[in-house]
Length: 365
Ligand SMILES: *Cc1c(COP(=O)(O)O)cnc(C)c1O
Image (cartoon, rainbow, N blue to C red; front, side, top):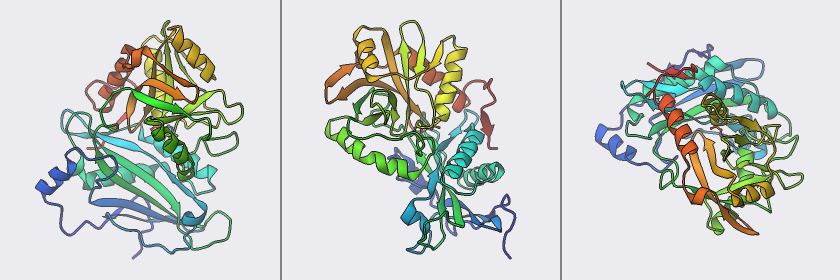
């Protein structure tokens, strides 16, 4: 019997669970994205029939034709969010509806069917429930959830596919950057851009990441951990990093972040930071900010702190900015107090260590 109700997940568990001692060993300080839980969620889509065949099944290979559309034309989108262990031993998600909505927006941009929010949320809940033992409890750790959607139709013609798979996999993670919250050294790419007006910059899609890797290689060659991209038109304005948004903190308490406008990924951490900073009494402005201004403001001391933010690394200070024209440092290359305070306020809510006045968290049990 086929399962036609996409909000009821049929569970086909693994036959043998990973023994507790082996699991503990695998979960001890895993490198980001290398250790996976025992199950995955999946829901199929066929045009005319809709979403169906929702299931939780053992984590493993997805059989597919070599002519699968996603492999050729890149109809792939994804999301990233975390399940956090709370002090009372429960689990919770942070603003998962925002991820569900962004996933729909990404789908629309890539001409893919939009997954209903309740299916997205149920898949997360069901997967965390069955793999609950993989939710780590050490400080700063979490269970990273990776929803994705791919075109599965076997067809090489160029048009939106008519068959898709939505899936969710999960990995226990520790601190994202080796060295924890040590300030980043970032490279200003003068060769590559990330997104142009009318392009896919606001969609969380595989292609954006594929295109950013050449810039990342240059950054690494220059001794930097991350790339900062400038706008594609004038090559003057700061946009964001390959997978994180940027904030600038000034001596009068103002926080500045580049405006969205289609070329910047609308980060949920970015949005949360804007709210938290505003409520903490900071003036928060979204306006274009040029590399020249950045350099000048860092030199005269008006600029006090810079940080990058995103789900994986939360809030990470930027200490040094390097480019073909040389380098400059911000606040002596160390993490500043505003960055530290925002990070602790945000993570206290995410981990349930403090009350959540915003209604952002969703308990899982
Ligand atoms: C995912 C992502 C971010 C951060 O978004 P969050 O919702 O805060 O995790 C920022 N920039 C890019 C390019 C991204 O892909």
